[in-house]
Image (cartoon, rainbow, N blue to C red; front, side, top):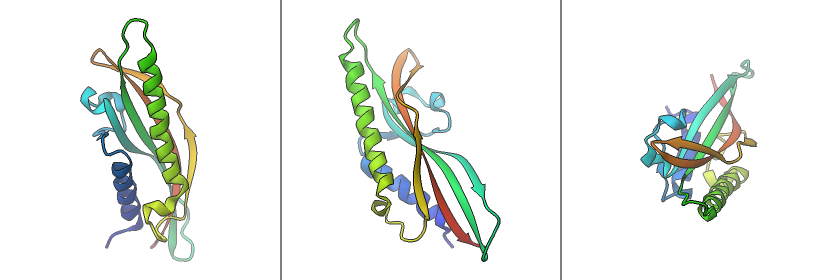
Amino acid sequence: MTTKITTVYDAIITKLGTLYPSKTRLPIPENIQANNALFLVDGYGIRIDNISHSTPEFCSILSEYSVTIILTRELWILDTDVSNDDTVKKNLLEDNLLAVKMLNDVSKLNLGNNADSFTIRSNSGIKTLGIDKKKFKYIELNFNFKIRENQ
């Protein structure tokens, strides 16, 4: 029997793959620096940050999941030319906006009654990361969703 969390997780992963067809999925989203630089050139990942469960009521358990979508881009800087930095930042902002739109219109995930609510919590802003003498920019979008499962 498939549980609601499996349905919701699969829907999020599938939708992210559709939103970002040219991006590579990060194999280790829990630790961005642990990924090979090739994955960070233009990558995305999903990290489960926290799970809390409420006391069962009416023969069901309400679980709240805190999740982060990670979006990455490689940064090329040539001497004093910062135009690529601007381009990478704008691309990350566009990538982030696609995820925000998805979360604001959960009907696009085709979840039916599998999730009670999706709420965007915060955004990390754009950060820089150096791996293997390369520079990358990344942004993290944090959100919550709730699922009520039968016991």
